Amino acid sequence: MTRRTWWSFLLGAALVLLLTGCSGLTARGEMKRLIDDSAAVAASDASRAVTVAILSPEARTILKRNAETFVTYRDAKTLNLFAYWFGGKQIYVSGKYAGLLDRVAKLAEVTAGSADAQTQEWLNAAVLKEAKVLIDVANARAGKRSEP
Amino acid sequence: MNLQELKDKLPAEAAGLVDLYGPTILLMTAEQLREWLNYVFVGRYTEAYALYLKAASADTLLAEWDTTHAEWKAANDVNADKIAMSQKIGQVFAQVMIGMILAVVGF
Image 1 (cartoon, rainbow over the protein chains, first blue to last red):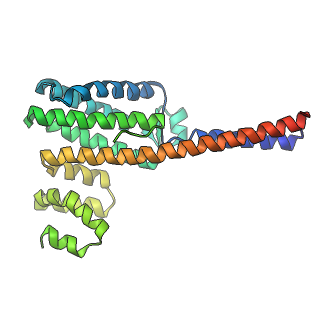
Image 2: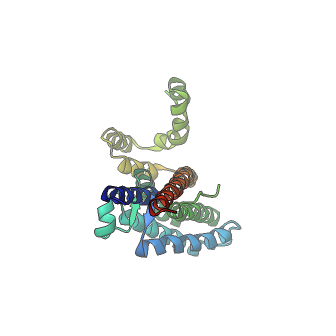
Image 3: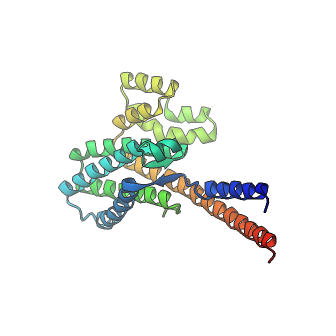
């Protein structure tokens, strides 16, 4: 093969790598583990919240923990590929997901902040709804569709 | 003017936004509303959203989680479709490259 053919091959391979690696939300290291572990815990929380089985103090603790998790995602995200690989940021996102992470962090903070005044039914509903979004984040990372 | 009159003056797609955000905006104090509009007009949407949430009722907060989940779901569907398409392109490219390499080495 000529040198030009090899260069074409390498360029094509790089293009394929770029295209196949283009998930809207990619995570590495600690954040990758946190996203997957939080989704697993959220699935367990959701199964109890659906029957309003979580007592209020525990539900408030869960909402606080979820808020911290969403804030961690927000602070770990970047739209800059160099910051992702070399700058210590561990979640690389598209503009769409960046906006969603900003919004959900704020929503979770406000939800946790208002939890003291709420009933057990409301708290369980909040835990259930937050769990769905934590699972959405894991699905985004895995490139999967979300459950309705 | 009430919310219904406002909706009547807007296109159908904007009327949905009035249904979603209108009731909470009506709960804002004059000071909050002024601050919220300032954030919106200068494009500081995260701050505007935070202010909106501060004024929201407990039920509105829960409804906001449903809206957020729907947005994540829509984004994930688009993302999954994009990845599936990329993988298909990758497979076709790999097949073409393998064919080229085999042709070059004489198989």
